[in-house]
Length: 568
Image (spheres, rainbow, N blue to C red):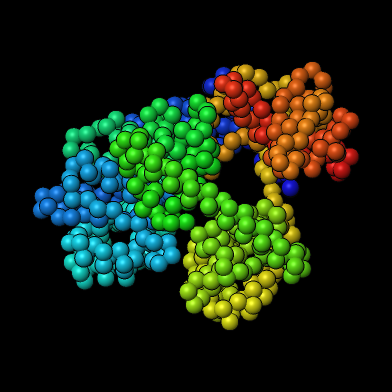
């Protein structure tokens, strides 16, 4: 990996925080790197408060959305809560439907079929509403570009309220209300809400009209925190507040559906990272393997007994997803080797039988081995469909646009996209994509980068530092877990490999022999023989709590290792 040390803040900025907060210069450095420069910034960061959530009526069209819902209640209209099939969409639907049902009974939910309908608002969903006498659809985590779908609904006498967080096009749909803080003429102060977050703001606005307070809405924050983690939105500002309190709900009294998923793990406390890697994949697996309705059903169960039955099914979907992921990744890696494409600057693979629900995950897996823009194709009807994933700072969407002559349709953003093409165009596209990427990507972009917050000695790590770093949580984009580098380390003699194939590495590292710390490196088993005999090395790592048999200890999570005699 390419090690990059983040720019160190100015001495003046560090000294100011050291003085006003009475903290170590290392803590001050980490805070300034996260945009925290004043006492007030630090207070908001370390003491998130629900009182600091923005007034939902600052969001454009919020008043119109609430008025339309109230009219639907008064006129006994049927309301459809519509959302995407991923974690953000299904949690948003569960949140909105759960809350509305506390007020009103005529609420239905709809998640589009990933394969039959695809992403976003669908004609099939609108037809469902029409056939069931529904006159108002609340769309969550989708809809901001669905001009034609909203017009189709209007032709059937169906209104739309759109709650989205994606970037709008030049024109927004002609809906009753469009809630999206990324609209150019929306003055809402925080722009980085996820789809479930925008839905929560609508719930907050409606609750305020009914005389409820934010405290009445705390039980819904487990869903919001799950969506924030899964959708990889910045954990700053309002998202940080919502995630902070949502994690408290998750750890103290989560809804039955989330509790049922957490009960599989023998740990006392769950972080946002745990939610991302242990809960979110299971919720996502429903839409990938069977249907997103299973996720909504789980998240809206009233009793733990019902939730346990639903969770068992979701876990089975996830097990199937993992097996497919493993099989397809292995087959794709073999294809790359067989076709002698190891040294290309792109990965483009295809097998008609690969499961469409996991090709995006497989693309990400392939990048772990061959770090380059990657597309995984499968057969979808009479066309080929692909998921694209990219590497840091390379815009795969622009690269696809340059190959659009060969594409039927495509969409997405800088790091992830989807596309379809005719099978006869596959090889032409594959060669053009390699040509376009080769001309625009730099050699540096083809080496994975790890950003280091600070170079420190082991003696700087003490209980006080660990206690303060714990308060940096919840972590996520723009507030990632701090990454440190320590030089001149060696193993004290307790090194061993772990895993069925000895692929992981367990160390007890020391710098000068005075203190040692347990370290775990997943996928670092290959370093075992290189580090024998107290071989000196430099290490990049993050600090984490390890819970084992009821005991909590600090360990280093290894990010990368460089052996000293191989360094420049």
